[in-house]
Image (cartoon, rainbow, N blue to C red):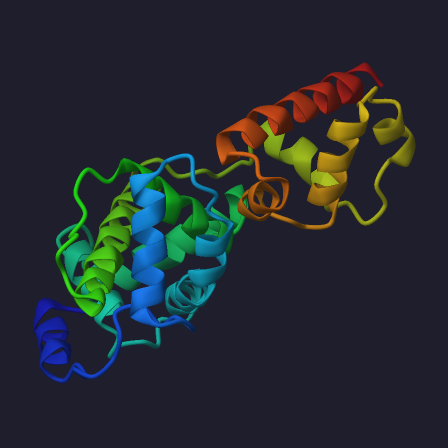
Amino acid sequence: MGTNRIMQLYRIMPTNTRAMPLACSPQVFVNEYFKCWQDPNRATDFLYELIQPFLKHWERMLREHSYQKDLNYIALCRRLYPIANDPQTLLQKYVEHADQVSSVQEELEILFFIRLRSLRYYPKKAAPRMAEYVIAKFFRDRLKDKITHSRNHPIDIPVPELIFKLLATEDVHPDHLLLKNLGLDRWESYLLELLKLGMNTMEISALTHLPRKTFANEGNHIWHKLKEKWQAT
């Protein structure tokens, strides 16, 4: 997708579409986003539900490359063009990278909330639709950086910790005896069951009302136990 093609697409972009395809109104979304930005300790489960249509739309765009009239998609490709002659190749490599690490959906969720927590500026006086546009741009910029990083630091072989996680949560025939003998307490066993159900870290954080960082620490402790037990067998 060359520069001339990108600029041509800009000229035919629709002007009556939202920057973020959400099921709620811009006012509801912007209000909740602002509250979560203003208060780092505020629970993000409601915001997590609100942004699901937006993130699922992004996942479809990254996988299908068939959204050449979507402002966010075209703007992202334009910013990637100086890095690669074919931005869509970069998008495909990012999708493969994300699927290898966890999933595209989970990676997008993490990006969204990392961007929320790292923001130093918020357009408080902007109308809801304009604020929504700015938030979409914040996310798009973060995604561009992530895609660039995954290009410069590819992952060809899953790390050992990822293999252990897959064995524990996605194996068709999990080693129940191994899991039973891990010596987990009731809380750790509960978290492991949630992972085995296929829940991602953002969903578990919303369900348990734990900050994602806290759950990450708990999860790493479980994987460390699993790794030690696996190597001892």
